[in-house]
Each structure stands twice: as C-alpha cells, then as structure tokens.
Image 1 (cartoon, rainbow, N blue to C red):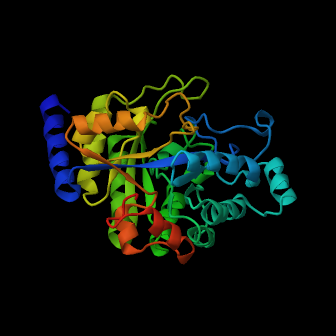
Image 2 (cartoon, rainbow, N blue to C red):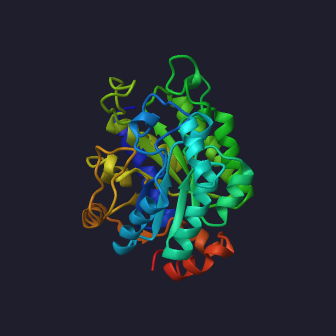
Length: 357
C-alpha cells in the first residue's frame, strides 16, 4: 500500500471513530495476576509459558494472588486481570496434583473461587482470559466476572500445520476459538477479543479473522473490544528471528479493523507501541486497554506500561480525551450485562455514563 493510500485509509477510519465514539479514548486501571504459567499449548511466539521444572509452583497460591490484588486496590485499580496458560492439568500431572491437593478439579474451578473472593472481599471486578473453555465453565465464570476475553489471534488452519506457529497448540484451532466467542454471545458476556499480527499469516487471513468476529458480533452484540496486537520478537522463542510487523502494516490493520467493525472499540496496546500509539489513534483506535500501575505485562515483560500521566499526554496531543473505564465497557454497564452477584460493585464503581467513577 502506498503512503497516500494508507493516509486516506487512516483518515476514513479516524472519521468513523469520531462519528461513532466521539473523542474519548478509554483505558482500564488494572492489576495483572499470572495465575499459572503452565499451558497445554506451545505457541512459537510465546515467552509466558513455562515447564513445571521452571516454576516454583504450578499455580499462584490464594495468598500470593490476594497479595497482588491488595496492592492493586491500594493503587486505585478496579480490574483484576487473570491471565494464564490454558488447561495445564490436561498436560501436566504436577498441575492436576496441585489442584487436587487444594480441593479443585480444574483450573477454571480454582479461578471461579478466586474471582468470587475478588468481588466479595475486595470490591474489585475480575476480567478473565481462561483460554478455550466450555459453555458450562463460562456460565460459572460469568457469575463473578465483569467481562471475559479470548484472542482469536489468526483463524487459520494453515498456521496449525507442521512448522506453523500453532503446530503444537490444540487450543489454537479456529473452530475451538470460535466456539468460545459464540458461547460468550449466547450467555451475554461482554467479550474482549482480537487478532495477533505478524506471526506468518496472510493479509487475507487477517481480514477473514476480523470478519468472523464482526459476524459473531452482528448476531449477538457482545464484542466489547477488538485488540490489534503486533508480534514482538523475544530472545529464546522459536520465532526469535521472525520479522515484526512494520508500523505501516500495524496502522493499515488498525484502520481496517475499524472499518470492518464500525461499532466496536479498537485497542492497541500502548506498551508494545510507544512510537506508533498516537498514530494508531489517528488510524481508528480508541482504547489503550488495561494499564497497570502495580504489575508488569507478564506476556510482554520487556515492554513496561506507560504512566497514566504519559498516556493522558499522548492521547491529548492528538486531539482526544482520556477516560478511565471498568473491565466491562460503558455500553454494557448501561445495558446491565452483568450478573447479580457483581451488580453492587459494578454500580458502585461506575458513573452515570458507565465509565469508572
């Protein structure tokens, strides 16, 4: 794509964003809890995943989890972001034994209990990224989660073939991930999803993935946010020498995401895009995602979060206003898309527009 063509595409996307969302760019102040770093998947670009011999314990204990949560609450965070490896008990005896010793049959069952305590004891709202789960499991999590998430990444069987980045990742099969997106719609779960670009996909595969997300959203109206995340190389991963997407490629994808999903907020992670974040706002993005004043991004530990004041300056310098939201987006607060178990906390933490009070 030539420079003028890209600028025209960005301009179209920017005008559509302002038409649909005005000049507000949102973010959520959160605390990041890496519940377990064991995972049944082995993606070629991941540094988060560990083997049992590389960790002190298969899971964080409740004491460790709530030490993190307490620090987040003291810092004014409202969201507890649970991110972890997918179904490690299916791959590792160590994980299953730990769960059984602590009275749980699965990672999701342990997660449900932790989310309940976040709400009841700390007045904070969980947002969980549990990977591929069943509809029954999602129904249980919905009782104690303000929102949930699963990246579609790239919906491509080709990338699951031999030597592809998802060759050893059963949870990355397109049909498995789409099922979870469908369950969330059926259960009215405000849902965060998105794409991961630069892992060997074609442009057509990116567009197809965004179109599949839009198709689900048109049916259920539950996609609260689409993330455009760019692959960043890291030492020690199988894809260490794989080229990263260029800034122009990222901006083209952000603008395309806006045009395909006109009613859905588009997020670009600010810690992965310190140089291009402002341009992403001019290409149609209108959310920075979760930003933590307490914990690092354990998925991208080399990329520290910007300070909130820096984020405010970056946003205002290109003509937008920064506003804090909850993990559940304002539209879904206003719709009442949350379980009675968390309603008191949601209503206490939100203002009349559904943003963070």
